[in-house]
Length: 466
View 1 (spheres, helix red, strand yellow):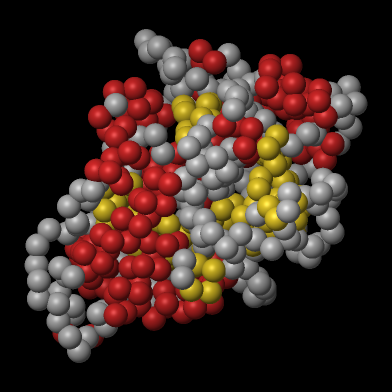
View 2: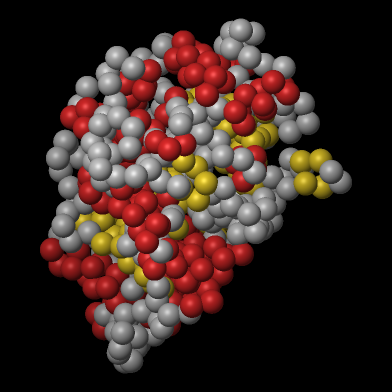
């Protein structure tokens, strides 16, 4: 077991320690122990998680009658908004993450994790990021990471902000940076960083919301700005569901990335993340390219410590490959919550161990339609403030791009205005999300979530999160 696990206060002999070993074994590890470990996790959660136990009892399921991971009841994502779903003493919570509130716009849940849960979620996404976004990086190699999302200093209650900070710490060089703050996207800083990469020849990684990339790339193209990023540069976006990436189809999005940034499609990775589930799921395209595997349609392959099924919205039965239904995720790293999560995302499995999301489910006539909702869903969900934030981020790109001078060697027109690299603050839109910067509890929560553990339970000398 690596030092991170020991530092996280997870005993190697405990259930959490064995789960951590399974995660840190990597994406190519043997998954034969999954069923046994899943049943252990289910028994633990049934005995410690009152909300989940009540749900299981209503479903007629208990550890005594469940013989396979597929028989474990999957807890609906919407139910996290109505109950505290924790499989550990609540006073041991050291990490809290807000859900997106996609179904109930005015109600969001909180996902709590204890010390062991924090070690698991960080390990799961460190392993997945390394395997799928940086598969060509030997251990310890880093590159500059430009993040089109707010950081934990700006949005301490956003799980995405904390996750991106972990990515920056483990894979980024010291000049890596978050490029969204209360004023929107720091456009001048972004353009300057891209020009620096061109001149230095050092590859960069861009990570952020699909819609922000689309908006920036289209704004750059309108101004005839192009960048020739060095080979090995890559783009990782979250969102882009329903087969469309913002305002463009998937293939057009990849062409836009290549035309404006010079990054080919094989170096573009889309990621699916759920607040209710610990592991993020990445496209396998970049990894397959690096490993010299035959080119196949991009898909997301669940790592050995997870399983993903597609089930009928009407019967809950598992559907065969190719049929569209609701994605159901089983994740051993979900030890502090529930192992099985029933999402409202539509998708299909491909028969080769992978799956792809096609959109958010919509209800027609009281039934879930096999066709996805037409409402765009970004990585932060449908809640009104998140949609307003996305709109304001896009506005700030337009505003900021008007203040950036185009490269005369690559453009026929020059934008001559200069000034700050972001738009003025829009408190009614942004501050509702990032007001946590003025909230001592939120700041402390974010700091502790990113702080190395100090033993089992609450960190020594600190009180539990409330």
